[in-house]
Image (tube, rainbow, N blue to C red; front, side, top):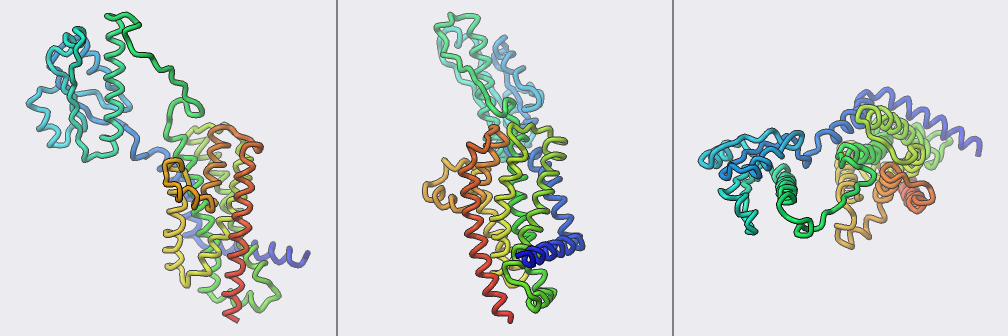
Length: 375
């Protein structure tokens, strides 16, 4: 037992030295947990930011002026007041994403109990801003009209007000959400890449044959690659959370970062084993890269990080329960966003451990078969 542990330790140190001598891998690790996290958190494509809007005010009333002045940074640039004849030409030229046309006698009709209509023209070539901005404009106009009418009508004539209480992310900052999700995705991606690349690198350099003539077992070879690459990813993940997410982006954690890292370590047991399995299937580094794309991207997209699992088809939800990413995303969101403790997230820990054991066992069987074919 001591000899096996010593072999695993020395082989793991060898993997760390090999990684240290691979500058491109080091650049990939540094990029993935710094600039990639920062970019994903700050350059979110579906966030409304500085959208251009023009207003055609045909009413010239206090209410229309109030609506026109309600659009301001950071969601909208200050609106441009234009005439009706300019509206189509400016949208054709791409100068305005939104054009709001307030009709004549709008305030008068509203006070008379009629239901006047405001026309909103949207340039849907900027689809993300168009989709999100339409809802923002609807809410802004409704809010201004409701506030205006309160001065002229009794309170019981108005609809019921909604008292909104936002938990965990009171500012609805997408930076808080996407920075954490990107760290989770990078943990999954890099752990599979590093372990798989370590095995393929030894096969391509011919050093795997050297290991086979030594008194080493496939279990020791695989375990050494798993713990060394998992350690690298875990350390860089912790540094990314402390320096980039909390330091640069200013994202607060509701729960224990140590508990999250324990969950990340459990997830790494599964994803590094997955990397070994993919490396036994691929015959070269390019094939391994294609396999990683085919496997990791669906795991990340369907894990519940970007799209809630409840909105997916039932069979997809059931199938993704066998994926470690599903339980890792659930665990991370519960701990970091909602402040959950171990009594809440222990089922995710248990599921990750069981999935990791299955993947480790299957990858070990594949590795034994491939090494036997080489001898």
